Amino acid sequence: MAVCCLDEGLSYTNFYAAQLFGRVAYHEFEGITVHADEGARILASAGGKPVLLLRNHGSVTIGRSLPQCVSLMWLLNRACEVQLATQSMGKARGIATPVLEGCARDSLNFDPKYGAGQDAFDALQRLVDRVDPTYRS
Image (cartoon, helix red, strand yellow):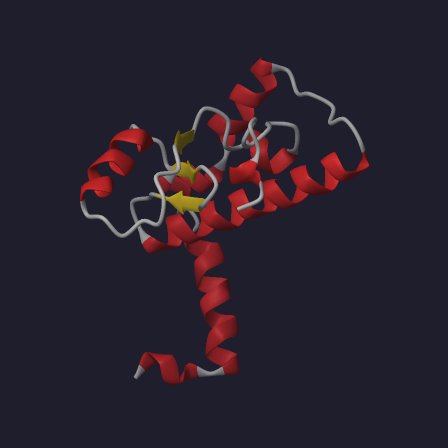
């Protein structure tokens, strides 16, 4: 949420954020999201991108499956954590656009051929199952 409140939004200055280059959209804050008509505007703001930052509110991930959405949300959350930690220490070092493009292209989080996050989701599910498998019933 803190990154959603920044004028610049997500900065592509770390390993995690680099994988999201060109895949983040923004939706302007309209107040508490309780009105159905905002749904169409939110979807339009996403513009087919898998990550949507709701200004002054929070984040949304859009994927082909729940595992992909979870993987994207983890990636986004980590990118935001590193960004805020970096900003607390000073100015972030930039990454050249061709390198950002390569990172986004090579990220396995988006490629169904490599599971698009299924392996990480399965690992997380095994952890939850060990703690309390009753959610399955």
